[in-house]
Length: 220
Image 1 (cartoon, rainbow, N blue to C red):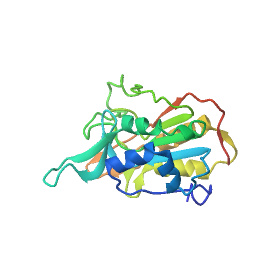
Image 2: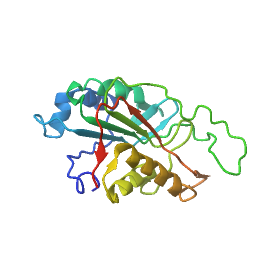
Image 3: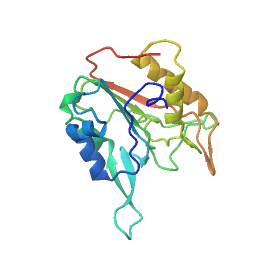
Image 4: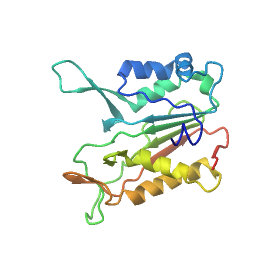
């Protein structure tokens, strides 16, 4: 509703894609434009949400196993996504917003708690890769080494992003909107989401903005 209904975007949902199919689609601009029925109309904005589960070093898992007798999922990485997207030369001037929803840490990684005391956080916001693309915003659900918070209806990352966009009272510069989303997620993840045996609090998303050649803003 946030994108298709409220903002009249051309929206597609791809459930459980295979690794090769997804990376192939994101590196083939003609195939991608056909998917959105806009062969002659390159978008001014391209938004990509990747909502799966993952791990450290940018690992993102699919729902497909490596073999019939394996319990390991086939995966790809954030770098694979960037390497695919940089082939979209027609998309050079358009705003590209890539949202990574997967976790970025082990299940039992140290999660910050106000009662914990010492917390080793020196690598939590490191920049590990610079995509060779203009007008790119990369928005992670959480910082490195921490797990993404999920409730029964999905990730709060996706939910709160939509809530902020839906409730904007005025036009806002791009960075202001993402800062609002960061703050909203941080506030609403403090103890509000319990995951059975674990509780994750104070989730703070991470945003990277690369080589902006234009000024972009969100319309209310």
